[in-house]
Image (tube, rainbow, N blue to C red):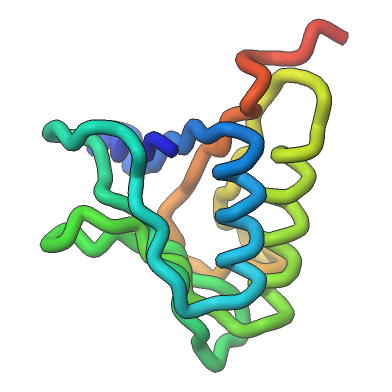
Length: 128
């Protein structure tokens, strides 16, 4: 898994294999787990993703800059929705990406959450 923080756009770009995305989906569903990045560290690459159980409502995604870790914290219901979205990306058979980005009335993200782009393990945009 490779996590790159883009300070210009203020978002994280996540690229992972099918297995890594499925593992991340499981961690989000369960909560309280740290998954380390498999890419070598550099200035913009994050060390991993930490999932935390929280009372909610919703999920907050933030950057722990001191540890260079993406933190996903939220209640079980909201984490279940995000986990299902991540699992869908892992099992999709086409290309593309998923934008996880707050907007008013978002079903599981809270205002102030860091945007994340999850890339399909199969590559760029769909050919449909």
